[in-house]
Amino acid sequence: MSLRINHNVASVNAHRSLLNNESSLTHTLEKLSSGLKINRGADGPASLVISEQMRAQIAGLTQAIDNSESAISMVQTTEANLGEVNRLLVSMRQLAIHAANEGVNDEPMLLADQREVRNALQTIDRIAEQAQFGNRKLLDGTHGAGGAVTGELIEFVEAGLNTKDSRVSGFEVVVTQNATKASAQGSQALSQEIIDQGETLMVIQNGKTAEITTQSGESKDQVVARLASEVRKNGLKVTIEMDEVGRLRVQHQDWGSAPGFQVLSSSAGVLSAVAGEIEAARAGQDVKGMLGGESAIGRGQFLTGISGAQSVEGLTVKIKGQVGPEDQELPIEGVSVGQIYVTQNALRFQIGGNQNQSVSMKVEDIHSRHLSTGVENQSGFGDLSEIDLTSFQGAQDSLRLIDKAINQVSSIRGNLGAFQKNTLESNLNNLRVASENLVSSESVVRDIDMASEIAKFTRDQIMTESASAMLAQANQLPNQVLQLLN
Image (cartoon, rainbow, N blue to C red; front, side):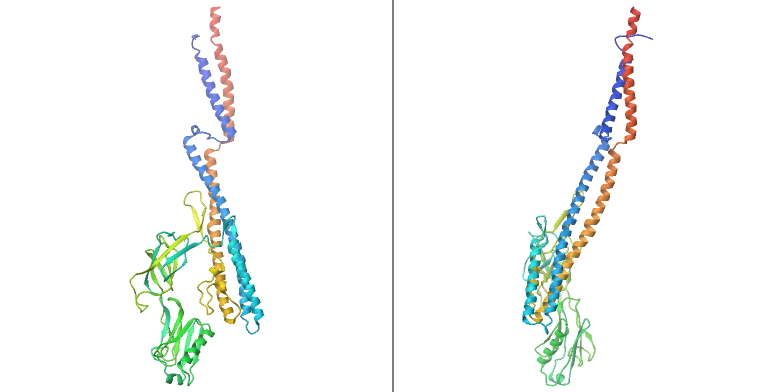
């Protein structure tokens, strides 16, 4: 055994071991105190990157869950207000039916019904103005889609959630086929001789029948008036006309290929081609055209952007007039009838933890002046706000508009319910599952196994104490040289 005093190699070795053990003990203490095995990049560069990405996703999912819950609360608030509007409309319908009981009601009773309806309409308008979630209005139309048009033949109807905003450039509306109505045109004039013989004329629509038999001495105008009266009394949606040569023409009130009816005449050519046989009217046709250069589906006078269209999906416009040749059934070259400018103000909800994970919801304006527009009626009511129950016909027409309003509000509520159930609540469940799984994965990457680390801590503690004792012993070895000197 050689003895050296300038370099105590045993002491250096023991000191190095002591430093290593102390470093390991320090890291173990840090992990045990934080509960994490990754506290800095040096603890595991790849694991740190993965865990930080997971943390960002977890934070995003947590906020998306809060966003979805807030959106559900907003939808529920909106739907509750619409429920009250529905209740008011049902009450108004009951009043309209009461007012239509003309044989019993006197003028004061009708005026009382009308005052109650006016009060209900004012309440509907107040709900439309005041319903809000926080400071955000819900039912005043600010969160629907708006449209402005150029051209006398176009009317904006609605825009879908996927309709793009076009407030600057607009969408060109092109018509390639006019809408027409189902009709039956007699080929033989209704002569006085035919009238005097007792001609049977019949119009059938959806199970309803209007039928008369002409009487000797009646004039043509009297025959037309009597048939038209039967049509109105039995609720058929057709008009009765006679041209300048005396030929009868029956036409459906609605546009397009769907509405139809049948006719019969006891003489060939007066209405039906074959005497005494029921004959279907010539079908109408739907409008055809394009919106913003993209395909559109026609139904009656309405053009709607097809599903999957890049810009005009769900956009609906009404073509109010005819273009092209006088014969409306002839095909026409594409005729531009104007532009439509869409402003999209739908509510948008961020329901995901990443970009472009949002959904939209629109809520229409429920002011009474925006409900039941475009309903055909003999009283000339343009919308729900104009209904009047003080006459029999007014009560009948008011009932028609109220039914349309009930359908509109119920449809809005149904859309909101579907949006809440199938979009928000379904997405919320998925977010919670995703967050749970991501937290579990992040825990595996970053959290420490306490049992394993405590065992390591105990080992490092013993090794540190041992290295410290051995360093003390190694530092005493050079003292043996003094014994030789002595």
